[in-house]
Length: 570
Image (tube, rainbow, N blue to C red; front, side, top):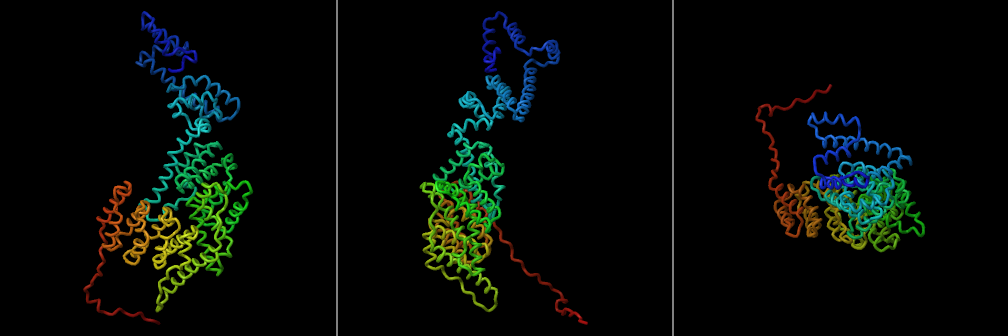
């Protein structure tokens, strides 16, 4: 058993030496057993009975060792649970005596348990754990925390697979064709942060502020390097999971904790009401001089797609409120705050990358010209919806958006977002004329914003219920020819289009279906996932059997010509 010599107990080296110089090896082994066995007088007479039952000494000693280990583990937990200084001192003394035999598989669990429960581990033990790869792997997370805080590279190695898997999970949720609905935004904030990956990362951090700062720094760096908004989501989910566990040591030092908490409540309620809006505005207006760098953290919170979706949905509700109350967008203070939050979220990458922590300036024409134009389009849609239900009134299709609208969505990211969510609202309400006219304009959105995954996921989810409308050539032209197909060379757009086709192919004409399948067919440059999904779609289409058209039943009966009796009125 390695390390016994350090405790003054003869080990394998002494046994080997004794066997080398002895005349009778059997006698030497017996003497070694007598000297180093369990030295209990009562046991000496009992051992021969075990021999009679065929139980060898190795099995006996191993079972004894297992019982001792079980009792030791229980005792370690008892001492650690009290939290008393004297009990922790006992654990430290015990660790000092037992650490030399940590390489023994029989004693290692006890040593690792002590390392796990000691709040502060002597540096000499940490150094030995660090130099032993197997021991470091087996060490409990609480012990590793004390190593990680001084070795950021090791902590990054431990976190990296989990962070990567988190991003992959989000992407799978966006592209998956298993659900036709808005599955990405469906889970509540609390259920999301109770996921396996976030739980593991929070446990790895524990109450260690230094490790938390490292994780935030990792996520900020990854966000800058890859421009992937899911890192912002993870940053928020970790913070709110720590909030749920009431780890005040961390919450109290994160400057965006209360802001993120308020945004989290809004995401949960799927709306930013006036009270929440005032609270959020207080956070933004309360940033003092010299503390501007907190805007970097606040912008990451707002860049989270769940937060951005909530802010934009709330903005559309406020625009609807302007229609209902016959007021101008520039007169609504809540709308001004929401636009301010959208600008901060959309500008998160530039803000952090430049290191110039100032809120993006808002174009006043956005409030005085563009938003009133969108409000007018929304009002026209509602008027058309009412007149459609009236008999003998010819309903005109909506006109193309104005030139001002086109200029704004090309140049202004906020204007693009408003146009995109206007289309989502029209699609959710199944306003086919509005979708046909406005969706094709989104190809001109600033920085190809309409082709971002979170938006396309929502758009496809709202287009799927149109069903039979995909039999219309006009509708298909707007959806496919004028929006999806111009960007189908991008793999992410191809994946979303595959998801849409998975649910609507049966409504389309064969000519249209063949044309889209030809455009969707992947080549060698596309990923295996795209190839696999495309083949599955082709199989699904090939095996589709349309439902037979019901034939009205012909009843051949002389009673059919008999008039029905009329009721008698008294």
